[in-house]
Image 1 (cartoon, rainbow, N blue to C red):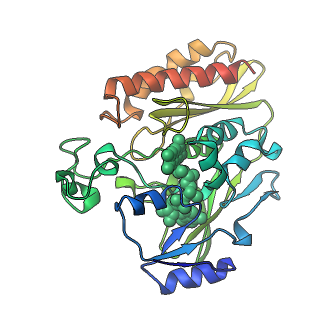
Image 2 (cartoon, rainbow, N blue to C red):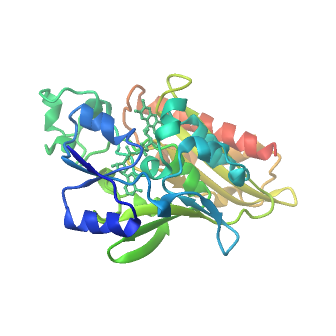
Amino acid sequence: MRVTKPATLAEAIRFLSTNPEAKILAGGTDLLPRLNQKLEYHDLLCCLDDLPELQGISLTAGGGLYIGASLRLWELAETPALAGYLAIQQAAAKVASPQIRNQATLGGNLLQENRCMFFNNQVPWSDVNKCFKWGGNQCFQYKGSKECVALFQSDLAPAMMAHGAQAVLTGSGGERRMPVAELYLSAGRKAIAHDEVLTGLVLPPLPAGSRSAYRRWTIRGSFDFPLVSCAVRLKVEAGAVADCAVVFGSAGIMPKAIDTSLIMGMAAGDPQGLAQKLMPLINKAVAPFRDTRVNAGVRVDMAKDCMAKALAAVCSG
Ligand SMILES: Cc1cc2nc3c(=O)[nH]c(=O)nc-3n(C[C@H](O)[C@H](O)[C@H](O)COP(=O)(O)OP(=O)(O)OC[C@H]3O[C@@H](n4cnc5c(N)ncnc54)[C@H](O)[C@@H]3O)c2cc1C
């Protein structure tokens, strides 16, 4: 295997456009295990680690924040610059283990591969090779599905969506921006071209009276992917809900936001009332299939619990 380490973003983009077989490597905590398990094959890696354009956090002209895609998750979790964006910091602090958070990047987290217990835990000669991810025509996780429905288990994606983050992509065609939600397409595909690099994220300024929180369910307390998670951002004006975003992670092939218009104007001091109002929407938001270790009904219950806890946290100030 060959690994190239471009010195600048322009060099990286040139390399990617002239080497269609090259694969981007950031922290490697998602990609390298897949290569080791022989779930993917790449002979040529393009390591983005030291690109200056992907580093750091800075203030934007509009009063928001620009976060470089190479920011390590430990830094995301601990930097005082992000103190008001609590859901993002809580999500970053929950990913995997301290060792992984020291190495893993924000960009890699948002663009990690979707996971499925049948694909990720299988040996190459197993019958599951006939699944969509192996180029077959069956889904073992959700029988009858016409495409791969492997879960997208990023912790950062729902938190970024709840805060209205924009992804900044740079490629040979120049720079473009899109809401993080639009990065995710059907069957686990991402809306990013081969010669495009996710260079960073732009967070809008925090409106006065805003609070956010992130809660997740896992089998183990640490070192585990979320079974389901929920990010909530709430803006309170004169004691009432003036704006609210609720986004579920590990909900299906992409994070799912629910419509919160039902709770506008309701008392922000009554998190249980807010949760009750939104509960019925969760059945549609969380995909009805067996996840890595829990069945559909339990996944929905866990999603309700995550949302109730996140709402309670933001309502308590
Ligand atoms: C044991 C274990 C537990 C884990 N637990 C969690 C968890 O709880 N929550 C969670 O969210 N994740 C978890 N992960 C997954 C992974 O560690 C994280 O998602 C991590 O943030 C990935 O970042 P990375 O920099 O290592 O990505 P990499 O592995 O380097 O890259 C991941 C993917 O993104 C692409 N990519 C990376 N950066 C860019 C860029 N700037 N532009 C374009 N493409 C890019 C790569 O080509 C690759 O396909 C876990 C992994 C392991 C091994």
